Amino acid sequence: MLLGRDMRRVPVDSSVIATVGYSPKSKLLEVEFQTGFVYQYYEVPKRVYDALMRAKSVGSYFNRFIRDKYRFSDLSTAIYEEFR
Image (cartoon, rainbow, N blue to C red; front, side, top):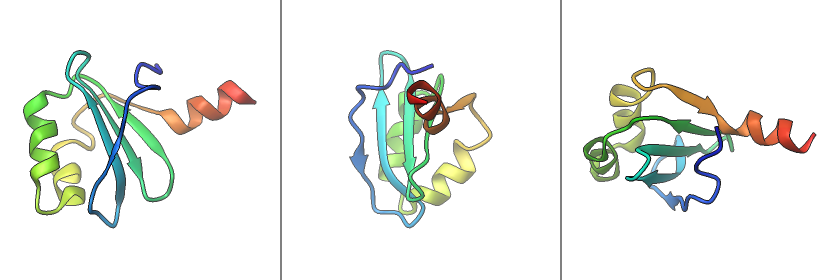
């Protein structure tokens, strides 16, 4: 699902995560990792996104409260397949 293709991501201060974007309307969280991989997480409440952006450690918050907690798609693979 490529709902967030036009989503704007903002840089974050993290050794693991490069940028984060969020759409409150669709509750879609998009995370770009320092490796270049991009994942979309579905049905993420705005309060979780807000807490992620305020976290002292964005990577730790992500691992504890988002990773493996929400359904997700690997957008990097979807984009690769689309242009193959």
